[in-house]
Image (tube, rainbow, N blue to C red; front, side, top):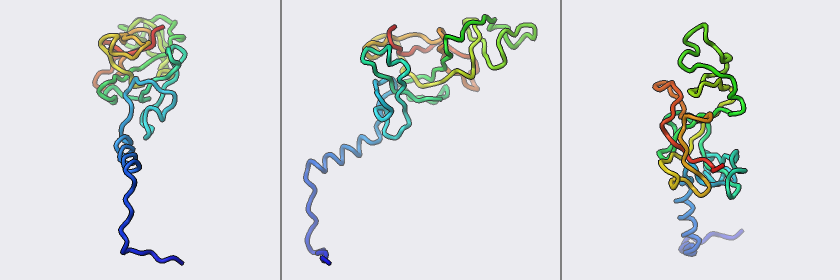
Amino acid sequence: MPMLDFAQPARPLPFALGALIALSAMSAGCGRRIGDECSRAFDCSTTQNRQCDLSNADRDPKGKGECTIENCTRDGCPKEAVCVKTYPTEFLSITCDPELEDDDPEVNACAPHEVCVPEGLCADELASRSSCRLECKRDRDCRDGYECRPLGQDGMYQAPSPDVPELAGGASICVPIP
């Protein structure tokens, strides 16, 4: 059995290997920003706290998805993003009165699992989803092939919270150009 010689100093790591280890350690905690392009979740985060949403990849010029955080709350997104609640537009067909729905017992066009969105349409709460999306002020804030579109229309709203229970517009997010 070979004996270890502790009197000999350890050989230093080659510089390139040491630099690679240091760079890996520094970048391990860094994730990509919300809205960055991706093909898989690992592109967005090595710790899996961000996902790659491929739902709009067919509308993306490069066929890529975007980094997001799913199931967010109104104040639960990074500073570059806003939590957006979306309702599938194919189900926005029954008209309702957002001012009277659920307040007046005589007016109740929406089913129990639906909410009357500000456009005056019933939206399926069970089919909705929330995710962090890149907030923008103008089109140039978005990546190529995307535009800045205001929330509060087409089934996309800023997510409600206990403090602000209404679905809100106000913010704008980057979406693929149709």
